[in-house]
Image: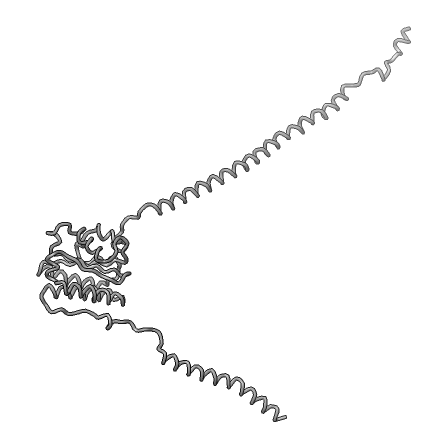
Length: 292
């Protein structure tokens, strides 16, 4: 019995598997979590990329929208806000009214058509008149009128604005020249009108200012008008002014006689060229054939 019991060994089928088999199977099970552990990182990184791209598109659109609104606001401000007044070069008929009479000179050259020489000569002539006769004449040039129908209404408006009372404007005169309309006007206080006289005033307005302005001789128009007014105040003979027929521009069109003469010369030249173009090749061909 002892022999049988001692010699009896358990069957391999009944013998439990060693623990080493479990240890071999565990690594395969443990590697799966490790391989799965990289998946959330990849997902999170891809999500970050997508979110950053999705956020970059609205942010860039918002920047462009802000820039567009800023440009629109700037353009509206420039269009609807008035620019500050920077001097006579950019003045208008309204600026002439509110600026008042010139303090250091006798000229308000808003149109910018007078030269320095003319301004200097006018200042010397008019300052001498004011010191001797106590009459002051101001000259105003504007490009065009939008508030008044003609130069006469605007000249009266300037006189009333610069010298509101009769005492202030009694011995004052205003000469206005509108360059775009080629016309002028003269007005003044009662003492000035009486000293100059209606005849000289009408002649200056109808001769010196419009005739010379039509030829764009603005300096001569202003200075000749000033000399004519000063001579009238001093009681000197009227120097007169240019006549419209004497200063009529020559026409650039040819007369009928000149056109017929030019046409005959042109016909003769063209006919000669046509004869040369046909006769010379035929003569050359005849000479070539006759040699053969």
